[in-house]
Amino acid sequence: MQRRSSQYYHDTNGVPLEDGRTHHVGVAKGEVANRIVLVGSSSRAVTLCSLLDGAPQFSIKSHRGFETYTGTFQGTPVSIITTGMGGPMMDFAVRELRHVVDGDLVMVRLGSCGGLSPEAVPGAVVANTPGSVRIARNFDATFEDESDANYVISQRRAAPDVALAQRLAAELARDCDVVYGLNASADSFYDAQGRVDANFRDCNGNVLERLRARGVASVEMESFYLLHLAAHGTRIRAATCAIVAANRGTGAVVEKD
Image (tube, rainbow, N blue to C red; front, top):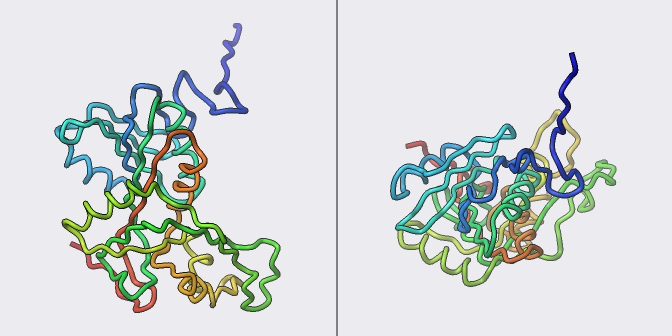
């Protein structure tokens, strides 16, 4: 019996496609709107879908954990897409969505974060009008002491589209307590965000102090990557905000409903 042969995907040195669908996000042309809301969690996507004009006209869950819902909000086409956690997942999303959407692309991230400034209390929303920096573990460091060299903070911030960021903050302020502040996206939830784990030699005791010295109000793992890619992409406007789940200084945590 002759075995049928087929390729796993096409264009391994570009944006890989499987039968016209992107390899990770799992979407094809015509399935995603030009206005996109990016969220981390599936539950947040479901909540946002309840605000659409009706049930999503298109939905798909990819084998890599992305969820896409496309419908209309007040008559305007919009897609709500889950990205999961971290920079690599955001990179998949931005690049593959740009590949399948023609024309101008507007992307807004509604995330969650830890608050660093005193004003960033649980339940408040930090609007990243100044943009975001990035902090990452330095794998060339020895981690023998609390050296600044252990974690690298980018000198250049990734900036949002100014008009979009201001519009987003103004709309949020109608119903939320909004803090306007710089964000920091970390390459992990633990060491680069200053969490202490006795099982590992992270030497990160000065991480939060260094971020506060840079004027950082919030810390999470995705916004820098979205803003950076938008600034270096083709016809992409982006802005980010995040609700504070906990204040890292006071230890206060948002209450469950």
